[in-house]
Length: 144
Figure 1 (cartoon, rainbow, N blue to C red):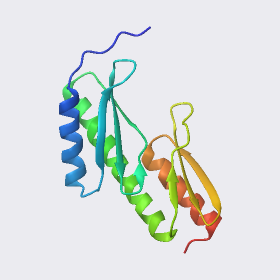
Figure 2 (cartoon, helix red, strand yellow):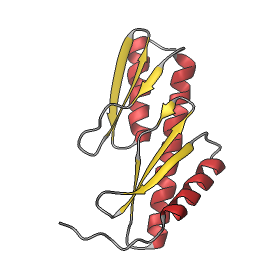
Figure 3 (tube, one colour):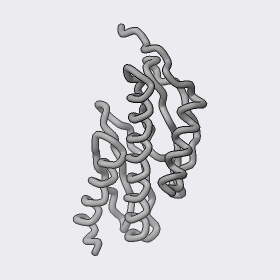
């Protein structure tokens, strides 16, 4: 069993940074909760946008504070892009509903119900998962 890495930032620090980045990017993400990861090596961030719950983001403590801050910035920016992909899908698919199926094997699984169809896609992070979902929806539902 691996030993937890020394906590470089507190949950309050992570929350403050997450909010600052999402505000700077002008993306409507509401932070629900920041909690310690089960392995003790970081935090899990739960959030939502106007369409519902977003995939959980894992922040891992790296070797130093600067690397950890970079990880938070990149993870928040990727989540912000996921929100933008959701907005594009919602604008294209009137009345669609987003959902988060259970994830398997460290990847992010996302889905949307629209036009009587259910479309699911997977990616290594929320941004790429929603990018794949948008491609799949465009193909499946012939969105212009």
